[in-house]
Length: 221
Image (cartoon, rainbow, N blue to C red; front, side, top):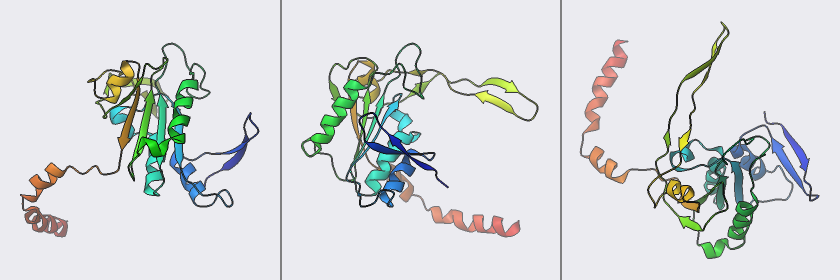
């Protein structure tokens, strides 16, 4: 069950909030939450904190934009790197989204000129400082200094913290490198994760020879 409530914004418009995921927001709307309304574009974000490199596989912000392209609707995911010093990921205190929001609005206005390919989303990541340009970049490799830290052992279960600081650096042509250098990174993403070279390598093996032994093992149990 998903709870939905109306939210009045400062400009007098009305939005909707749910206790579900960002993907649920897209699905609720696509399935008729708002009478006589059809989605023609999904903009997910602005997320408090970047979604760079490998992080896109964990990101609810990116997932909502992926849901859009599943529905043959253009999708844009927008995130902004966390600023140095104290910030609040719930209220947004410490984040200044004005430049990122203005840039995203212009992308939306000129989406046809941007040339977004069908069933492809744009993953936009802004630096925490005023950006010095925009770079089209590939996904980089996210590096973390994660540790397992026991916070509490109450007898009924242990509470752990597993996250550490993420290193914001990478090759110059990656989204990590672009944001580290103070530029907005724009990366086109799609669903096809198939490793074509890997398929060719697997096809050269006769994997069917593994089927009979597996069936015998199941029968012996």
